[in-house]
Image 1 (cartoon, each protein chain N blue to C red):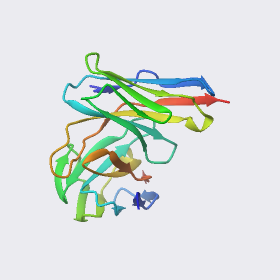
Image 2: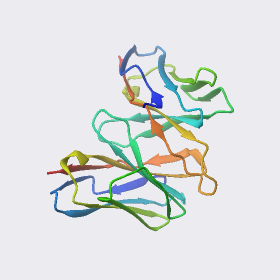
Image 3: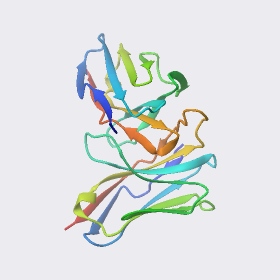
Length: 112
Length: 117
């Protein structure tokens, strides 16, 4: 299995909703990441987990809350989002070498 | 402050010819460089990478060149094929943290390559 799987593929949520994005990999990678990509912009790093511990938070607002329940799963909990948070959210994982730095297909999030 | 720059938003190349995509960076702490290909509504797909101890890395039709003194790298695709048409992102990272080897990628804005049959 050489994939990073993200669910759901599409999500529409209201500004008062609580939702979660899920990411799963079974490659044994011990580093996992969340990126955000807006239209016609490059992906921007949000969070980095190393060995299930949050190692980097790139000054992301608290309405985004990451969680790493185990070495294969990464969640992103969403609460009280704003319309400007609408974007493609990408999960990635890696282990030791950048050759294995693999992205999922992303969750297209729309906040209404 | 853009640390990774891809100054050409788009590039058109005839099928069979060489495609050259350029990337410049400003952060001297960057130690590892990667190229990704991205189709709409999909995640980036890893193409090729190079570490700062090398100046060239080749993988099939793809070659990446790194000029550390100029803080410049380029991706060469030879020969170009219509299936290569996509947005290409250059990404850079400092040396990974020990242990899990996590890379903090900073991406350029991308170059849209169109290969004309």
